[in-house]
Length: 193
Image 1: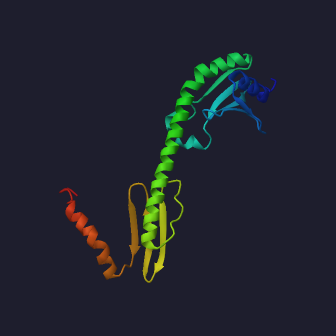
Image 2: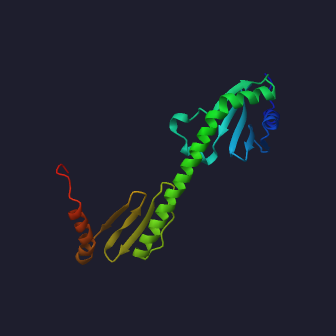
Image 3: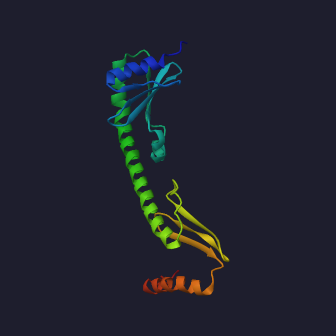
C-alpha cells in the first residue's frame, strides 16, 4: 500500500474550496477558512482520506455527545472536487453548527470570567489585597494567610462568595454576622431545612 501524499491532497481540497492551505510540519494537512475560523485536518486513514473539523482550544466547549462526530472518510481515488462535494454535504453542515456553538460558549465563558474578575476587584479593595488571576474554572481565590490568629481564604465565583476564616476574634465576628443575621431574618428558612 502506498502512503498518500496528504499535503498535496489538502492543497488540492483547499484550492477547490477556496480556503487556505496551512504550511506546517506534521503528518496531517491543514486547511482553514479565516472568515469562519473553520479548520479542516486531512489525514491518511489506512489508505482512505480522513477529513476532520478542528476546534483548537475551543474543543473543550464542544458538547460531549458531539465528540468524534465531526469527521468523514472518503476514498483516495476520488478527485478533489468529489472530495469537496462530500465535505460540503456530509461534514460542513454539522461541523459549522458545532463550531458556532463552541465559539458562543467560549464568549460566554470569557464574560463569566470578566464578571468574576470585576467582583474580585471589589472584594480585593475591601480586603486591601490585590486580586489573583481568575482561573479557567471561573474562580478567584484570595488566600488571607495569617492575620494575627485568623487564617483562611475567600473564593469568588459566578454564583457568589465562599468565605472560610478560622479563629476570628469575637468583635470582628459580630460585625460580620450582624448583616448575615439581618439577611436571614429577611429570608426565613423553609420548614423542612
